[in-house]
Image (cartoon, rainbow, N blue to C red; front, side, top):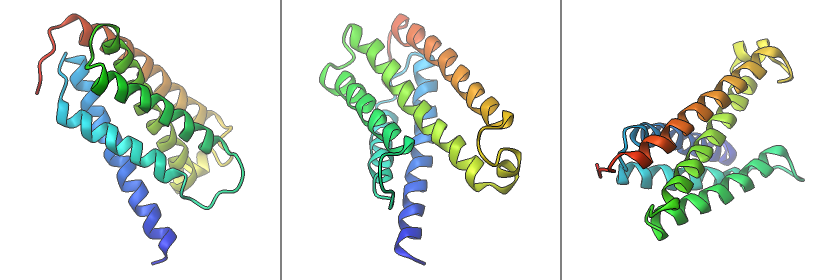
Length: 163
């Protein structure tokens, strides 16, 4: 197995851990729970997947590089809101929005990679300009807008419990 294959496997594993823990965190916010350990796992693995994404042999600026930079900026805001500002006042809202955006970026990339690597999906949208790809991305985007909006209301309006 080549070094690049191992690196790719580690990157994918970190990405899936980030998505899985992010879903748990988002569900927790929908229930008004902080889930501190899950938050730490989510933020750590999401930073790690964004950073390792820059380790692939890509030359020049690509949409993936741009998304990685954007993700790290959003994560910096989420980490600041969560750990420095302790979710106080408006920082609770800032955290929910930035954490939800970071999770969405991971899912966005998961959809892109799935349509590139899974043969049945690649056959449906070989250039990722076809309707099935657009619909998958649209459904993900709308889902995150709805869940993020609900999380901003529920995480703010309920007494937050630590779990």
